[in-house]
Length: 218
Image (cartoon, rainbow, N blue to C red; front, side, top):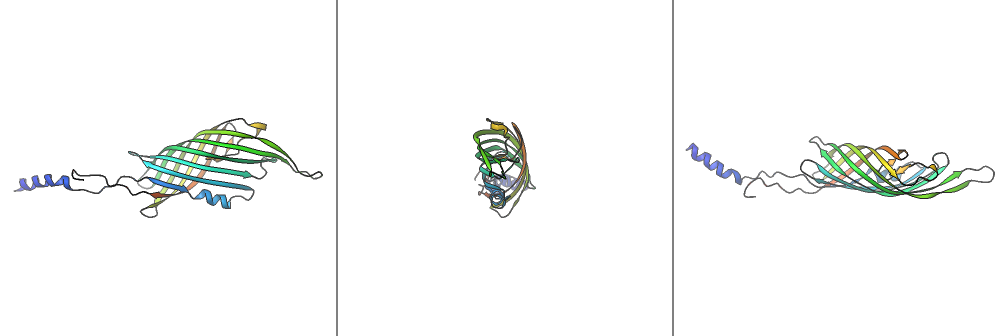
């Protein structure tokens, strides 16, 4: 009798589905950048926007990030005003732990244009301005990211991220003006090789995952 029950159990076992779910595709935007554009320092004008998609792989996510950034600065470096504008693309991988810890890296390509003026404040004959020739530059670099995400609802996730970025700048640097603001990196230090740190707050929409088949009859 026991052997018959065991045999029936083995035959019925494949028909049971446990309804496990595979990871979802995540689509998100950086909600900090538009806020910073509106309430940033009064002496600089920012225009910032970034969107991202995370595609699940076997044990990690493929991360694709694209964005636009522009800066029109007031007087910097004592007598220089700059206008930077461009687009960037980041591609890399991320691992999301069970506790919401996010670790990953991105390769970065940023194409941007820099223009500006030399500004000298005059007391007798008025202010004097001299144009800085327009420059088209390309930045190629790498960034590491560390963050934490939490579920707001079954559909929405909120992620806080910190990053460290370094990149090489390709292009003519006229008049000895170093890079000041690079789209995708932000304010930078350095000249031909720049580096920066930054933070982001992303709101993600989680697409419904499909159930993973766990039986011969699914």
